[in-house]
Image (cartoon, rainbow, N blue to C red; front, side, top):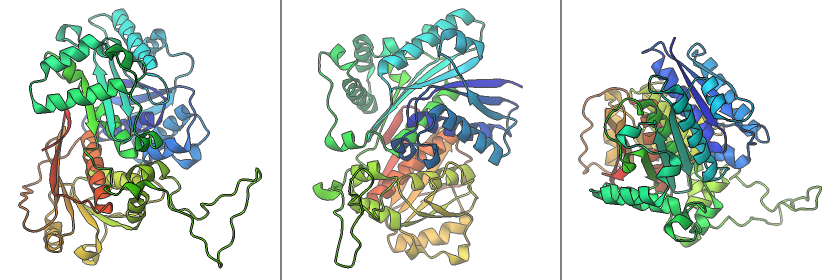
Length: 486
């Protein structure tokens, strides 16, 4: 049995999101191949409450304070056991120092790193370790792909290096140099390329190690992004994009330029509410009938007793506490025949704060789901009425739901359509009424796990806009180059 060993350097929530998506993909591949995926979790970092929120269901509250590497191993093993995929999916810790010798000894096919929780220079160092392993293996040895991710409140970055030097690929250390940035700008031939260059410049300016290379001081993030360094949607998207990059890294022998090694994703202004005061934490409401808050052992008085934002504090800071309140009250329907996409949507909606999700058409697994979310798996069509849903997400053609969608359009219930012409591409279209012309077409087939997760989180971020009363009609395209307005 062919084994794909993936070393995950655990430094932040992105590591957990990456491992979760990799697990889903391994489970999908189980019926199509005889391969086996082994996750080796390395690192001594500890899980924080912010990590649990940012991982969007890949970590549990009970993981807080424990080893992040152990939490990743636990999550992968639990998924394998619950999905009966233990034969094709396993996980264990990789102890000791992460060296080129350790990477070679375990037979790694891919190595994941992130600067979340550590510096960019650490990730560059791991990239150079991979280069040393390739030199030892030689041209006839196993391929080794290095993938790096970084996530913030509104933007995220993925870099992949499969070692194809003859095709133009560079190591991460070389790719962040000014000469590589200049090459990206020179190669930018389309508006999308120019968008990638602008996002790449922002990425370089956000790191104290790379900003001086551009002759600048590191740009301090705005107050909102500073309070919420990463959101669950961006973290999950970069983790999923990274999995897709790893799987497809060795599939193409075409020339690779600086633009192709980098993928930058952004929230496309999905988070920012119009009202400046929407970010303000709610003031404690007290009256003569309420019990006064008590002090803890240190004498601190908690004025947020009964606060309903626990576990979502960072995201509430980003898109507003009023929107967070609305999200927790919303009822969202997910329908379609693609079980993987339905499952991804439920997980994505739960990660942004949705408490109640109905699924119709094909059952989801309920794994990597925030514990606060109640999912009615395979709800009864007879019980569905379009006016009771605040939003509907359709992941694929589903004739049994056509009548409901038509009724929803009549009452202008937002309908978010996800379409996919091939496993690695998708489009998310938001429809706000019957006058909007959208041709769903016939069922084309299944998305791969990474594409389904990214599309699901794009849809979830549109639901955030609905909660902010900023709903819009739009089309957003996901492709190998990134996420763009269609």
